[in-house]
Image 1 (cartoon, rainbow over the protein chains, first blue to last red):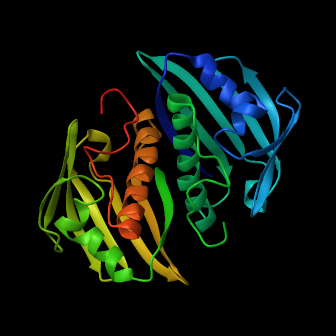
Image 2: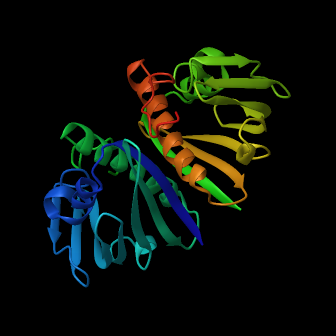
Image 3: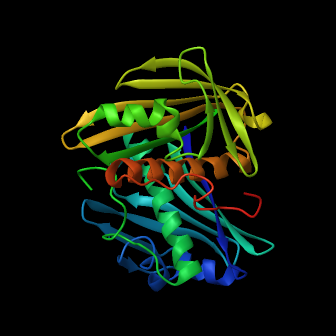
Length: 147
Length: 147
């Protein structure tokens, strides 16, 4: 098992703003992909669509201003069954987002790609919360020809 | 043992340009930190300095247009003994950079930070090679108050 781990610090004093960006369609479509559908409630399914495909996430946990946990139920084979979590913590003027995409079976090349790409989107989340403008797909930074 | 893995695709047809950016002081100071010193030769030591500290890397392998391997010999305790490698591969119009920072003992919070921060710098490398302008420290994206 190998994991993708990230931490992004956002200059913000509002854990609630970060939590909203992770748990509403409007928020998610502002930093990850403009084509976000579904229900962000425990037991609900969120659908994230991109030019090259997409992911369906079942929402497993929602702890306001604190933690979000999803499990991938549809998408690329390597993603199915993996979990994606966001933990929030305020430190002074910074909202810290601890991100984990856990449960990869092997450190395949696609995992390397997804690791960098998650960072691209976490920087988009940071930009959304700091400036009001993110860079969600399809306006994200492309890292490969097939994107 | 846990690893930081990334893949960044650069719109470029020159593996040599990417290799130079990873193996010359001028190149390294164009995307990682402007304060880069030392000798990029096998057995040599490169010194990378930042506001909050820095890293000394012994150059273990240099394979032109293909692979670079460093080992950390000084810096934060968690980094010492870990290895950093870059593998290059051309695919059509894209130069792919496979990055690994291997040998972390534990997935500490600092590792989460470094994972995202490596992506920030790989995007700076991408920008340097695609546009001629990177965003090396001290002009990098800051992810925490202590940076």
